[in-house]
Image 1 (cartoon, rainbow, N blue to C red):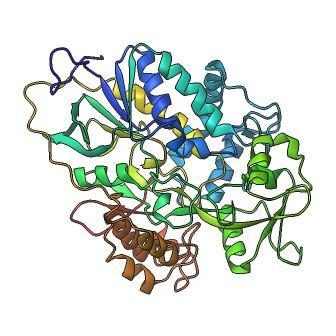
Image 2: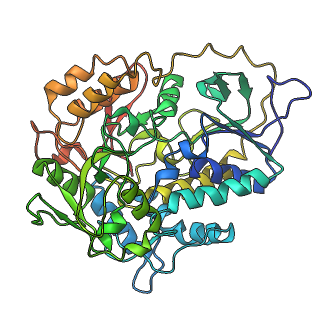
Image 3: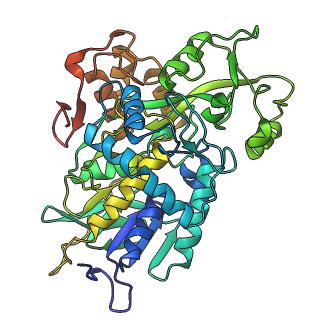
Length: 478
């Protein structure tokens, strides 16, 4: 049962049933889902709509909708890409509920392209896109319009969450750079941490703030060493060149015009092949470029003519598979705290995310988390004083260009103990946790490649979990 509670607000202030932190697809969809059932929601966003990773998501949303496809095939592809670390129950939920979430988006005004796309690691065409490579931005725009029109949802932009507010073993709200907010449920949808790396496709704000806030509050975090590097960012920029291009025939060639890898192999393999080659070009001439008008215009704006010659590409940090540990309803280990989207670790991606499963994960687990959050009991009694916020991991005083350069150098495509040990002295707390997890995983698996442990170790087929005050522990999730 939904009940109003905002213990720190004055009598005239709105009382919210849930505070959602983040305004990407996960946050917007969760807010709409809860509001559909009568909840009053506040979305707190540290930037505008274009500041989210969602806005840059190009490829699409995977769902088994083709006549030759089935959820079981989607699950098999997901688990194959995940290299033995996918949580089977989470994968099952993801693929079974995918068609319903796609239908819901269509009902909310998202106009998907007619042709299903193919991306690396998929055995069938099952990727739904919008305007070729504009999926994330278009979906976010459609959800954002619905949120703006909803009478039960308020949005506060340019407000930054600094610390979770916990009392009696329960999360009761959040402290921001403006105020303290209390609510029966707090929903983390703050995104990932790929902007900690020097080369990244992510916006500057993707620095893992939500992951670190949850960890400091006592929640478990896991798989921090598992970071996906997208193979094809336009060299020298943050512009992602969607995997859908390779699915439609784009070729990877070296400086002599020779192909050197399977363009549709899993992303970790393609990224390392490009890294080892040094010089790599993406030949877009075999592609029907009219299917990707916005992306082609952006490439041309950067000074290239994709219809005349191949364009230079290089890998970049793209997606954090790890995050705040949740169950299948987005619940964390702290009562009242939920996590969804890239900030969360459901175990669905394993050691290497299958292309176009990320927006799908946002939708599926945001829907489940929003419904679960409605059952949170009202806050009662007088809450203790909200905490003084700890300095954010993204504070410019500690997250310098030198730090980001070091993260790329020591925790990039290829890692080894000496470099990771150096990162344990980083001034950024989340970087230290990432290094600790990467040191613990003495093997190479999926996106995590150790030069000093170049093979996969069956004994490490589990998840390294961090809790405050403890070294990472290997857990196996069923």
